[in-house]
Image (cartoon, rainbow, N blue to C red):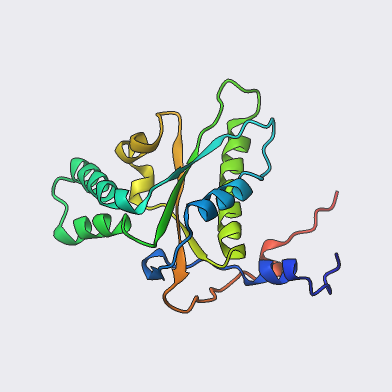
Length: 193
């Protein structure tokens, strides 16, 4: 495939951008579409074929429970939290029609370095974003305070796992913005011996 190729794959890659979860509206993907996205996301580089990641779907009827969990965990760490902080934590769980929590779940018994396994989890996140875009949805990958809370993590996984991202999926409720991208000269180097 040449750089001059106008294939739909290249056009797709050039058009993908993240959406703001707070701006996402219905319709979101149904259960079968989410399963298809996860199957595509799992087709990621994975040295050793370890599958060092897990996908946890948070259905719409569980969003109130997730909000309560996040708020309780936040108050546990920050008892003097102000009302606006609490409201932000509560609203985090209610963004977008669909939510998949992606966990980095490295296999510590393996000889494959943990760093490679963690990069595989990041690649799975990116593949999930690509799958959502290819299916006509918009997606956003968020972390924020909930991703680093041990109490929130424990609701989804174990102590050896980490939340790689909250993957929000829906339809755009506002025009997607193109963000500034680095010039190729800023990020590309040519190595010389």
